[in-house]
Length: 323
Image (cartoon, rainbow, N blue to C red; front, side, top):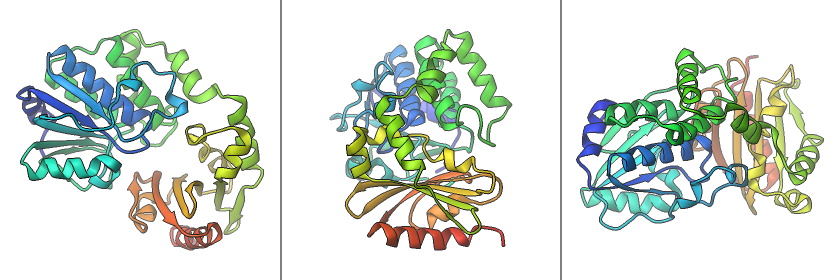
């Protein structure tokens, strides 16, 4: 059922052991939401663990504390809180444990900001906003925990990454208000902006150049696609975490309305990241393939040979471009 953050806070305060989970291949907003909430619960004396199926990606490895995430749900937890996760399957390897817990009548909570959210928990709060950390910040206030520097740093990471460094069209006064609160708590704004958006290794720079020089354009240059293969990553000494933000570059081309980054996860499997500039709803586009996200930023998985994937994706994209 849908309910308020105040009600969710009251349920959390009744728990003795909480598992906080988020989506597979977590980004800054996923980790930021999870660890900000975890720190708040620790301040209140509530035992909790952050659980994520994936390793910390290389682009977030500089953030202290993320290595504490566990890959399995703790035994005997009496509440599971999912943050920044639109559906159960996005939990990846933790999805089975989540479903088993539900069957055992362990209470579940879902706090998210994706328009594609399926309301899969017992208690659901879904509100579209720049970053789910905005929802978590309000939840922390209802819990009665003060936002100290440590919590503020995690919240700020989520704000920065999901708002595209405050560049997306869902950035509002509320987004900046929380950023100001984080700065007031002592967050080093320059440090996080540099490490998340400017700093890069030689390997990432090489992969970026190799990828962008082969950008493909379709439909009078209104759709741009980049392909990141495992071979290219190996040749450059790069990894998947280094590809964060690649999709934003082709979107910056004047004529482009939709951009896609096609990342080879393994042979025959591709992770598709989609962005749009002004009017195209990439959440609906991704939904064609079982994915989702936001109107201007979404993702999905496609399977098959690369050229087949490109043909399939470009045909679907054509349905979302104005004639």
